[in-house]
Image 1 (cartoon, rainbow, N blue to C red):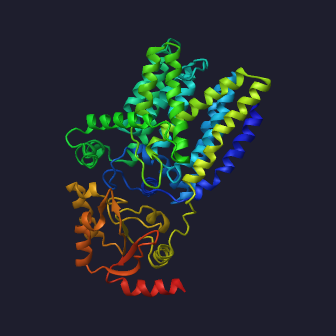
Image 2: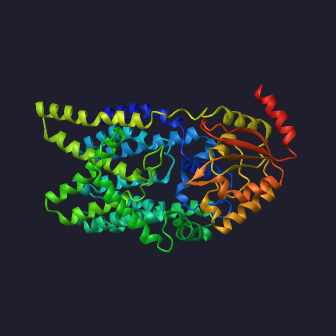
Length: 513
């Protein structure tokens, strides 16, 4: 395919994804965007803001917020543009060979459709390093049975991509290590290892400069390693065996996950089935050609790619974006090779068969996203609360949203009165964060507090938030707006500081007219 045609295709696919910029979001994505916005306002990770994630989670959001402010639409639009840039980079890297060019074309088509399967979870670190994995595999070529020519420039890019993956999370270390192992083991790339080291050093230097300006790196170990190992792991049932226990669970999940490959109970499972078949077929291809070491590498790579397979009631396994993206690239490569090997009627028959298999994924993603709507009006009472807070508070007023509604800070453009944009059971279980949250509430005395009556991992807010609720009651905070209907999308109430309540109520009533 010619470059102009690919460009037109990419523009059409990018436009078709515009709806993704406006759909409702997931708490995790909201937290990434809200913390990025706070960083753009001068807050610092780990000292001013609690998080148990690495800084890479918040880098893109903070840079975008520097320009656009707390605009979720701008951040989502950036993720769509990033996908288009990745697809275009794949085309540029692979187009010298026809099979490579078609691989990029099919990746663009498939991933543009399947991208909606991450609905509401685009601004997450898994997407960043998922794209990095895809680009690294394409540049290396060999794992995909493609052979792009190695060069110092490409080696620098591969090194930078591996380093990016490494900085995403401690969980990513095995993925980065396996990619680095491929570079060292592949004779075509081994001689360029020093250039890969230059690329890795370059990314680490740039990332380090940004992190130094936005994070208290002296506390990173405490928040990202110690907290996850000693507190967060308990909620996974991994107390005293955080690292080995995590990988044991990941392996057990992988066995169960791939054992159910042909479970087709609904269209969503059909989508999952195709993804699994692609991944297993990638390994089987090496086994069939008696490339035993390659098969072992691929199997290990697949397992570590989808090592965090959380699936909630209203979302796919959103930590598995790198696995989905990689499987899409593998599928695109296989389709492209088959397409190039055929001509005439056999090619037409293959196109019909492929469409017959892939078109149901349109139904699958439609099924998975059928309940989605623009976030603008998820609940009438919540919308009236937002309108009142925007009108009846000033940008200098501190607010709080408990236990977890980071979107509230973005929608109101008000900063939190607590050292976090959420307060979840594992923070209550960590004495430093519990104490810091209560101390901050006492010191800042937020003008308004939004409370959601919800459960987090099965623990009710009234249970793990009992200490905060007791302080709010003792401080005289008054409920002025509420939505407690069990059938409502959100069960929320707004509390106002006693000295501000009369003026706020009068202002809110005026706003509602």
